[in-house]
Length: 115
Length: 109
Image (spheres, rainbow over the protein chains, first blue to last red):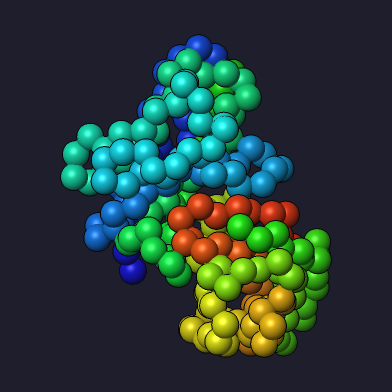
């Protein structure tokens, strides 16, 4: 069964450093997402991406965040200058098309620890 | 998207059916009911979704009331591996999912 894959599974970084989280969406999917989950809290939407541009973003997705599809298979989330409160599990997800009844499939997550 | 209400926790005996309820009284006509689950801190796993008809797949069945204001996810023969947090989410496009607290289902031996 096709799946969304994410790397790294766990990263520890110092406050102020840049971090790039990588994702390979399911191959015939066109719509990509990042969600995050701070330990003990709800899963929160960050951003959606379609046709090489951001489709929607939440208030969490401020100027320190950016997303990119650098090639035909990868989708990345960059955090420019990490803060302690960025420590969370980051989930990449993908879906076929942004239509009614669309189904989103999630990866296993990248656990980011900022120290 | 409409808000959903789920019980915070439920228990089920292994091998029995687990019936997880969800209220979504403000659901609109174009909104689907989605169910996901999350085991520990793994990625949310899609289970099933439906608009108004009952749905069944290899994982579960989804029963939606005729007025669409509530639904029930049924795991027909729960196993220990079904212990997870189950999320009921209402969304029109499925493109932005709003996760609530969900229901912690514990399957007991």
